[in-house]
Image (cartoon, rainbow, N blue to C red; front, side, top):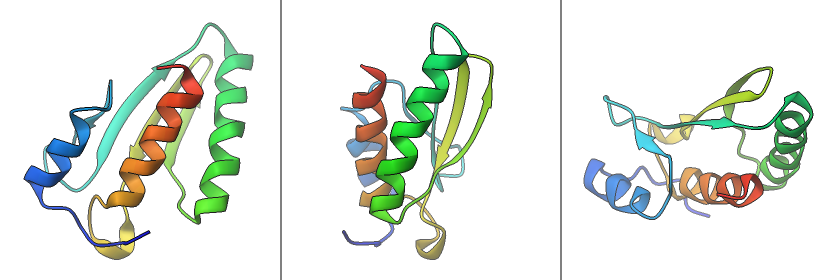
Length: 98
């Protein structure tokens, strides 16, 4: 998958179909907070995402506190949001049942 940086308009357009995701103010990343019923569900989600991310060779910036997982996606070597980020965000939504 291409690692070409998407312009702000292209990134915003790609996010229209992704529930819960927002473009950061600087346009360099996309963000979402996932909330689960408990820690076990949050950790299971992170495990599924970790396996997918490793297969894609594209890893999220994230943090977990109890049942909440905060995620920031960008493609560092492209300097912003790429199709890889949109693809991983789509998978994350699917894994979360969103």
